[in-house]
Length: 202
Image (cartoon, rainbow, N blue to C red; front, side):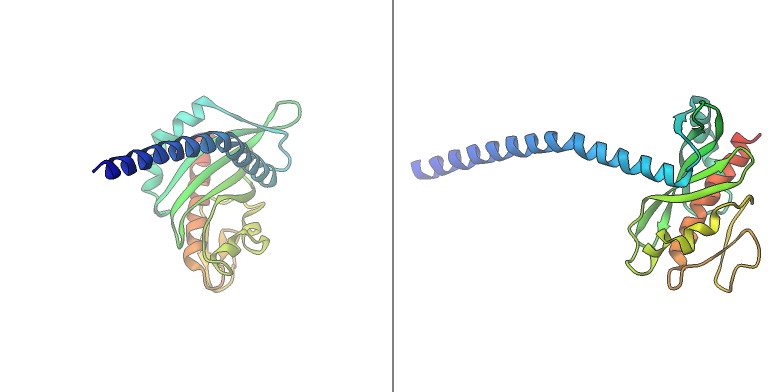
């Protein structure tokens, strides 16, 4: 009986020590991970909107996101949300456009979050990926210029995916073997464009 109690006490002590150590490691790594994530996000923003010197939140536009959620959901873009919007500013602090993030929950491998740059004139400066976990060699090819650069420079209200070759500005060639991914990305971009057209450009 004493042996069992002794073993239980030892096991309890080991568990407590292990818990304390894991907690300490978590606290130590939390800040570096957050910094790395922020750096990756900033790099994506700069890639999407290279003419911008900085990005800043606008409280009024941020509040409009929640107010427009149901309206966006009713547009037929799929299970998508607009997550955030920031003003893109030049070196003098002038607003030259906007950087929006939006998410589609309909990717083949899960949710896909994109960053979308839109000028004050309504043209897309480009798109980038903040989160994507599609199939390697297929859906992950959405990150390749051949696919994502199709959105750049376009000023349309709604994009559509085609598998037969784009014939108009609003058509996006699907990734071979990854139509689901192509549609998910396009839906997320459409949500961002819709929010810009109806809540920002008005």
